[in-house]
Amino acid sequence: MHKPFILKLIIFVSSGLMFYLVLGQILVYCAQSQIKVNLSKEITAIVIGHSHPECAIDPSYFPGLANFGKSGEALFYGCLKARKILEEHPQIKTVFIELSANQLDAHMEDWVMDEEHFQRAMKSYFFLLPNSVKWSFLKSFPLQYSQSQLIAEKKMLNVCLMEESKQNVVEMEWGGFVAHEKVVMDSLRHQKDAPSMSLYPYQPNISALMDFIQFCSSRGVQPVLIRTPVHATERDIHESSFQELVKKNFGPLKFMDFRRFPLQDSCFLDREHLNEEGARMFTLHFCKVWSESSTLRVIQ
Image 1: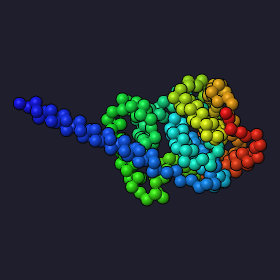
Image 2: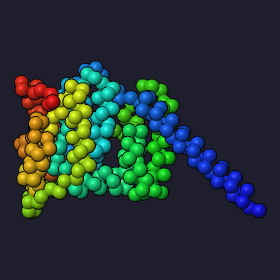
Image 3: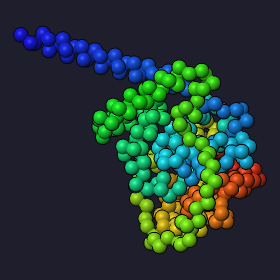
Image 4: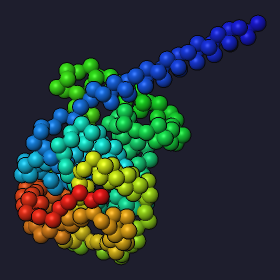
């Protein structure tokens, strides 16, 4: 007696689910075409990475540069947004990629696939994420994925309905330079006592970066690896294996390593991050070195 009702219920639920899935794909398509990266024609270079470039590179002292560093962001995601930026702005000819040792290490899996970071990625990059990545999230966090997808779709809808001048990466939280006025001296008093350690490569992050480098080359864009300054008391515990991995995977690329660029203690927020004054001094130096270089070329 209840079979017709149950059948109708199944059809109703299935139809609702199908409608929701189709609506979601329409939102993704609209977001891909409408959400813009608003950059002036004078911008010819961008920076991607995590909190190190976010705190260290102030574009106001580097003409023609836009900073898209974002705290806690793996290059796995940074390369996705950089692709969209390059697709929309053919005048960009250089991408500075902040390659810290932790971007290559196995613990980066947490920055890509744990619940906290996947929720951040869903909110900012849902419309750019490959279906294979979404499926991995769904299998790992089915309930959280559904909740995060709803939040992401609401955000995409809101942005798509905004005035065109506001449909940009600021609304999508894609990062940028953050100035810190504080000087945290307590964390600089003693050198860390830590033995040297080996990196255990996290291949998805490395592969994403290698694919992005090939993408840059196909568009005539030069990828340049950089490292921003850290305090002298910050131990290079992974340095040996880090250099080996860089040489093995990214050997032909130019590597501008400013890790030990000398700065006063007053220029640091903590051991790994610069404050506003440190960013000013470093960016001026970075800009000068880049401008004076006469051997840069696109890596084929």
